Length: 277
Image (tube, rainbow, N blue to C red; front, top):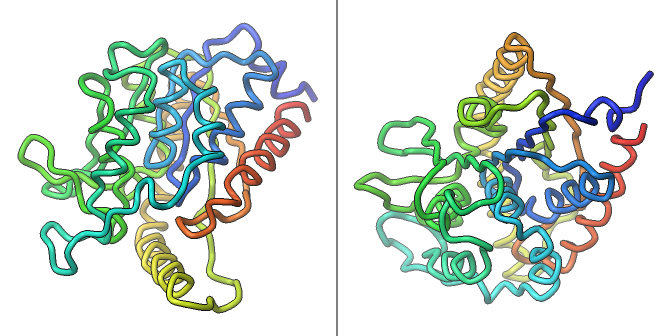
């Protein structure tokens, strides 16, 4: 059986990165494994954490992420909002937006070296919103605005939130805006809650965020799974090869950022084995 890596040679390869709670590290490891093997994607799409990493990669700034992650502290993005503020969210998101504005390699989609598509959820319509042009930081911010953790992002009169709510893997969005022969999907499943009870107030908040996130995931997983499978079927019907690499990285949260580089390294190794096997 030919290696997946051999299957990709000489083809226009697109990459679709799934939503995942603090999956930035794992997605970065995945792309590092691709680059180490000479795979140069021509287009990227992503939801949530996938949108952030896709933006850096498409803009030619993948190398910026490991040092950024190595020095990232919770205080860099932790800006609690008023308890009963509107729209609701534990964090305002201003510090997160500032991080994006400072570190993204380009400021507009049109300035990216490769095609980029990100997905957010338009809460006013309950539908997918696709970004492929215009300012980059607001689009990535909106795609990463996980309900309850971040306030929704107001854009053009609408409230936008995490893209993973409606589109965990934006495969169709990628194919709507890029010409590719094959797509590599990096899929990070939703995490479970089978772990020891937390200690202390921060540990409790960490668990509450986990519960909230997993409750949302459970409500959406059936519909998203059907939608995701349908996207794969449509892509293959168009003659586009779809290869899915699933990773199970060490869990990272706002309170366990120190595990981030471990998750990146573990995923790079895991993805490398999948590509070489």
